[in-house]
Length: 570
Image (cartoon, rainbow, N blue to C red):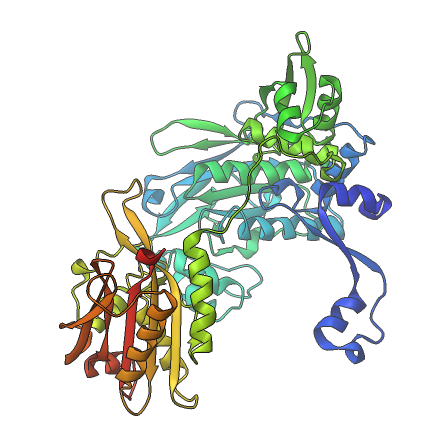
């Protein structure tokens, strides 16, 4: 309601939005027939920047808009520390170190939920899980009805067979192993099982009576589930990244503390670490930064007064005022703005508040003439003529498996000078390609049912290690072509090489042109391979592929290939 009461212009200033309706959405996805009878009510689809966690729920979005419109002042978040012995404690045991070593906690005391507020509370947790929590890999959030449990709470790790409780919305108790099997086919939770299923110990949180609160990052216990009638919420965030955990906790409690009996107040909880040290959470830390008005004006391209810039920043939830003789603007960064890391972030917010469309366009003071890189220009020209020669262009992945560039081509991986990915997510993307040939052969394998012959080419970069560069690797622009038919078609590939050299104006002679000489290659049939020389250097090979190579790429017919480095011709 509050969002719709604001003008469309204001929304457009702050966020990228589009107007739609339920009827429009169904019409686009399923057709006009299915959309009959759907609502015409206007819906705002708002694109929120990925680092603005405070805008991921209706509460934060409305609060930000209200502050921007200067209808309300920016609230001050207060951390209430209970009297000694009366607050909640979360004790972390040393068993968690190898699984999820970090945990933070807080309490939303005397909160007043409605159906809409409750739904928004749950929705924010899910959005944070998908965003900053990296699908629960870094942080997992648990919210519990504090009136159903009693502290202190213990965050530990146990063998799966030793953990037994009734999961959320289930009717009976299961062991941790049974829970993993139960949710293996669940459309939502199955995506998180891999985070702990291969660990010898599973993380779990108990209260003082042995009641299970949650088994992070998988599922909460049914005993502590919250509802619209819940008055006191215990929030815990466990994870592998303490910084992210603190940010997530701050966002959750600041967004919904306005519904507490004392608005914008959060009851702190004490976390006890395995070494005996304690820490009070949430931190709700405010910090101050100073930025020169000249810097803001210069970076944006405007000429506003210091007081005007301070007002713009205050409207962006960054309380600001001019200090000294107007030489500095002091900005207070609230706990909701974890995205403000550097002065450039403050400048960006000033630009958003000013309005990018309001910035006067100016002609740059430097005079330059743009021009296409010669290598890219040559690449584009070759692509057109190769297509005209009857070959079809393919664009394949720059990453591939070690097997693709080594074993399948009859080479040892150490001889390829391949750049390896430090943490590959799949066996298909382990290294940067050192040759374009495997990508084309895999493309042919995926299109074997197409009419023969298959004639493919690609002009793209390959990557090899080079200790002489600052990054330890170098790109080379290669051209590769493959001919696949019932006969090898070596003459077709040879003819294509001649055509390419003709286009490059390189004559067929040894002195200042190109030549081919018989050689052997692990990927080629013995006696059917030639090395190509031009510009006084070897630029590649062509020939008939070895039957073993063809078989390893799941092909059944002869194949000829050509691959050269085109950079010497620029």
